[in-house]
Length: 408
Image (cartoon, rainbow, N blue to C red):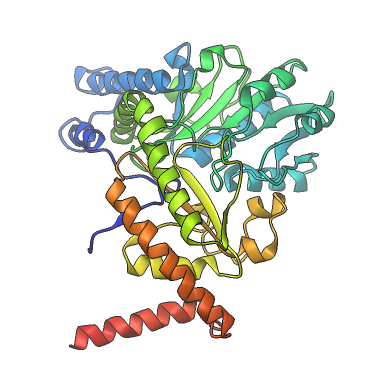
């Protein structure tokens, strides 16, 4: 492939070479079942325990046994919500927000159809919650409050500690989807009011296909996947050993790079943001520019189609997105930006750039040079009414040019 400038790290991240190396033996010679009594299997079990300790350290958990390994963040979210609901069958009221990731959003919509009452908390124009609305939503029947730590589209960080204190004062469990913050900002769950928290390895340079659910000691919780005794009877199924080992190594590396994430990556993000806003007067940032994770920039270009921008960026080897990878292909505009009250003319032109520690200043300068010319080109076409075909027309035009080059 041609060189790629990867600015889509909220969708997934590059696997850290150290994590890949750590996984290798467990894909080949160390193939024993970690539940086996014999030494060949028990050494694999010890590798899982080490990964559990490394993951707990990333979370700032009080005890590694509070970490349950899962197949992904979506499973962990489902396990948290369903596990609490099953443990509290007399309560059929869940509080969440309008801007959750589909893993929580779709599940709560499904539960609504099953008879659960779900107050959907709104956000303001900066993507922030109103804590008074949260207080008003809590009732004696509330089984659980599930609120994300940071939004996957805008990067806006919610005041999780304040939320936790409000909810815990009512004796209600708190679940937090922290998939977008693990490895980007420090976590210290042993001092937190959070009861359950989900993460996914591939968001912090670990492998795909493995995640984790933190469940605080003392929380009554029922398993989502029922089967064997694995994960202390909290999640049945033979463990994905190589994935778990890779996740542990990625977590260990992430802890060591937290300072870099907060300084270097933030500086690169800010450099890209300032360059784009200076060169593109018709562009603006979506979401609070201070209270957000350090790697994320969501910017809108008025009257443009975000997918058209992505097609042209892709021709330069630049990878970005219009929002959550889990909603890619949907014709619906961003539910996050709609909840924020962003006007339709701006929503359609939204682009998310999400960086990582593997990005460079040279890559930022390259993107900052290409984006303004793309915006100018598309605005010219839009003004002339030549975008009737939308991004598909641009993609077809691009493919036609590639076929001509191939024949030459």
